[in-house]
Length: 81
Image (cartoon, rainbow, N blue to C red):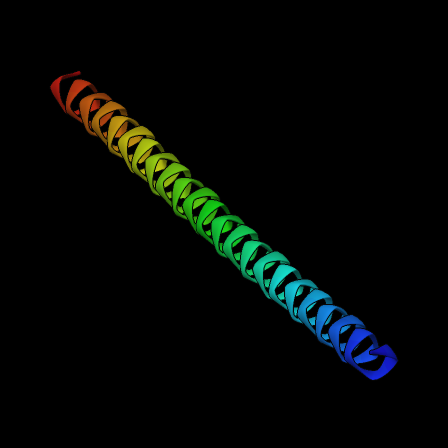
């Protein structure tokens, strides 16, 4: 009778340990999902920074073209004088 109760208690302790291991596995899966979400956000921010750098390079090229047009116009004015 006492041995049966001890075996029942041991089986219950083992089930509790298994439930705890499963909870820990679930917490680890959740941490991994969170790390993946962070990696995606970091990647998106990096892509946005690259798009902004490209827009800035395009603005700089446009400013350079404008300066070239101004210089070209001044040379033509000087030739007519």
